[in-house]
Length: 265
Image (cartoon, rainbow, N blue to C red; front, side, top):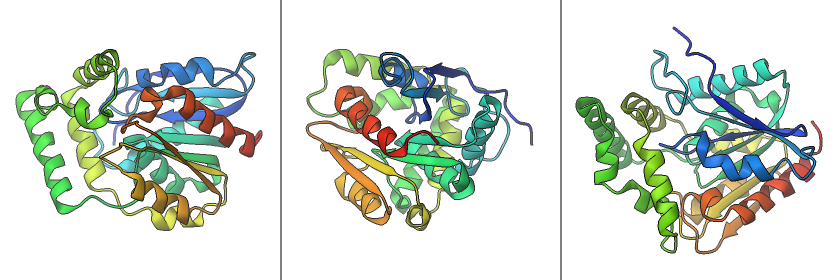
């Protein structure tokens, strides 16, 4: 196994450590508003850390077999390098899958958990087959054009999204390296059910879902909120899968509420 270089990381603030894990197939750029606002006016409410996950943004993919466990261990190494023993982990979509893998492998390092527009259940056979189809296509073409052809942004965003946000998301999708897209698709397809992991956690938790999320809809969010011991569920009206981008103020309010419940780890 050859580890990738340390991930590209965006960071702001000095308060409670908060690691933000981005959605597929985006990068840490999706967290710009959270990086600016969540640390608070004096920068002391949160130490916000947003890494590019393996292969995306400025991070090398390495040569490991596709696995969310590998991505979770990347996060643990990130905490080691930052001198952080315990942190609040917040993941959206694929980032949520990685956060749940982290909870399985490193539960003692969690101070709190936020799961946004994600699910703890496994993919259907059809969904796994579709992920493999996309993985093969991007590698064969050495291009992520198939994601644009299938208008991925349409399924990621709600119906009332602004043209500006659609263009922003489309641009981030176009930046995704084919190798990273294929690796992530195969890692997500192989993920196990995580409901048992969530049921064992004893830390403050939050679940966020866009009311119009068609990829990981409200029943999946409710399932996670029900199984977690100490969770608050936030449903954001008229918002799709990328709730942090579509409704940043409401999203940030839910994050701050979780940080207040956690306190300083």
